[in-house]
Length: 471
Image 1: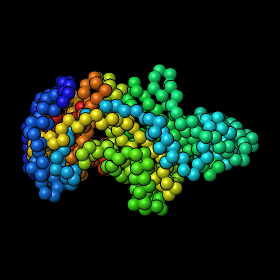
Image 2 (image 1 turned 45 degrees about the vertical axis):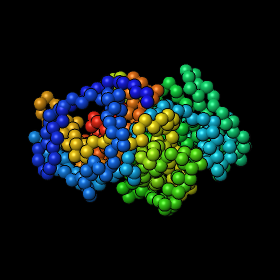
Image 3 (image 1 turned 120 degrees about the vertical axis):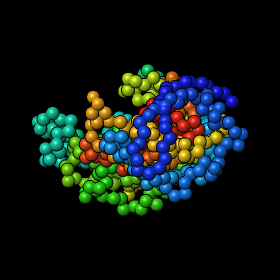
Image 4 (image 1 turned 135 degrees about the vertical axis):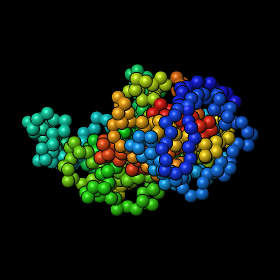
């Protein structure tokens, strides 16, 4: 087995703490996150550790505490979720790429019911009408969006009306070229488009960005709703702001049942020939963009299903983090990399959108059964480090109260990169403590969608992992 050492950063001393409502500790301890040492520990016993032998409580993880100031409050009444296997693996993966076969499969699945058109096609009259209606609604509601003035918006309306007058009645079908085109600066791309119902443009973009954060494929059934859809793919606070829209009185849930929607999403995964991918998350979503829509406008509802890779019956845990080592952070030494995941959005017409991030290649299962730390050890690490992570001291003064609620504790796999090496990474068992915390002076609650990881702990060596760094 090839082992590549990469001594990564340091985190703090942990004083283990168990029990009921009491002040939480603030001490820190040093735990080197070293890939080779972690792999050695993973294989310390030949048969690994069975999940049933690590002392997971029957029922829920229950805990309540406050820090020494009394202003940080932590409460847990959380379901503990583990894979339906006894032994967990460690596997090595490398960055993959979208293939011509992937492009063919995507085209076959997503092009159903559409007329394939070229990039320079002349759109039919009906295509422009929804755009014209949207501009007219913006004019009526006083929403300028990208336009700097009402006069500029009026000019856009006139130009669109001219296009309608000159457009053909019916779209002209053109057979797609299912191949990639080289991009300037490296990588390759493919773009496919369809006209649906002679009125709606559907678009698929597939990019192999081998020098950047990884490949990405994105399909949307109606490009006029791209601004609304972008709110669903945004990260950070946008996840919470969008999820709140499903509680709006104007949210319109799809008529299709969740079961039928899930069947459509699973059929897409099957059609992509992704036998190792399983559904690891689901939630509702709303198509709404406050910058261009009226406040009392309808929030079109979607089901969202999230799929991740599974190795020997254990799946990668889905979280809201899309990227490790965000290039926007100046304190990050590792190269940026997208986490591998697929998100499929379903409405009454079928697949509304599909986003596939960063295909990987499973190189080798390093260990079929790894050694795991006792759950009490993991619990103690969480109860200490959640305080360290959430200290809110500025110039010696605590800014405000903060409430943290743990809603689920999940054991699964996570891709952990080696510092300064994105060519290969390891899928390692980790514990994620999911939950909510209040923000913006308590006016916002982050994490109610269920996929905000408050803390991630390596199940093999107990090191605390920063998902925004990837290690």
